[in-house]
Length: 385
Image 1 (cartoon, rainbow, N blue to C red):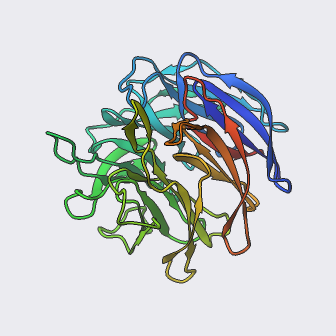
Image 2: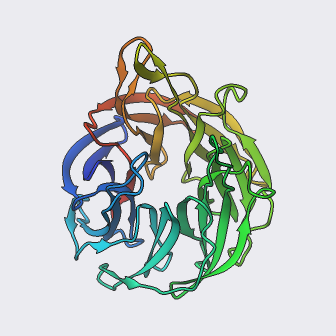
C-alpha cells in the first residue's frame, strides 16, 4: 500500500513520497490552483480524484474576491496530480470540503459568512452542478462539514467567535442535517448550554465504534459524543477532557487544532496552537503558550480518552497533520514563520514523529519551509488505489 503526502504553500500543492522506515519525505512535483490559495483538500473514496477548494481570502484577509473548487486526477502509481475538468466558482471563502460516503457529492463549508453547499460529482469524477436545498441553520463561523458513516446525516462544525472589545461572544455548535440524494435538511443544533464557552473546530468518527471525537478550539478541549445509529447526536458529550499541559496560563491565545484517530482506533491526536504576540522594540514577537501535539489513549469499552503525552511542536502553530496509513508516522505542519524574543525567526516547518506501539510520539526530524508571502495552510496524506 503506497501513500503520498501533499503540502500546500499558497496556491501550490506539492507532492512528496514518504519513507516510513527513515521517517523522511522526498519532494517530487507540484501543481498550482488557478489564482487562489489552497484552503482545504479531500480525496474521492475511490482515490482516483482529489478536490481542492481555494480562495484569495484567509486569516486577516477576509473575505477575498476569488473562490474556486478544482478537481485533479490522481496517478494511481505515483500520486502525481493533473487537472480534471474546469474549475468551479464558489460564493465566498471555502474553509473545508469533503466527499460523502457514496462518492456522489462534494460538501463545502464557508466561514464568512457561515454557509454550506453541495455539488454533484459525476461518474467520471468531474464536479457537477449545485444541489438546491431550503433554508439551513448554518450557525457562526463554519469550519468543517462531514457526512456520518451511514451517510444519513451531515454534521457541520460552527466555531463561533471569542468576545472582543465592543463585540459579544458568538456561540459555537454542531449543526446536524438530514442528508439524502445530496439534499440537506435541518435536524438539530448541538451545543453546550447556550453555545457560549463552546468553540468546536473539527471532529473525526472512530473507525469501528459509534464515537465522535471533537476538537474544541476556543476551550482547548477534547469532547467525545456517542453517535446514534441514525447519524444524529445526543445533546451532551459523554466525556470532556483538557488537552493542555498548563491550563492556567495563556488561555486567551490558546487554540486546539486538527484532530485524527490512529488507524487502530486506540489513540487520538490533537494539536495545541498558540501564536499570540507582544511588541518588543517595535517588533511583534511570540509571547508565550503551548505549541504541541496532545496524545490520548482511548478506552476500548467506553471510548473515554486519557491524556498520555504532550510533545513539543518544534515550531509554531501546527495547523494541520496527518497519520501515515500504517500508523507508524505522524507528519505535522506549521502555518508560517514566527519572530522570537531573541531576535531570531522560527521558520514554518514540516515535523515528523514516529508513533510507538503505545501511541506515544517520538520526534524524528524537522524540515524548515520557506513559505514566502504565503502560508502553509493545509497538508495531508492520500493512500493510492
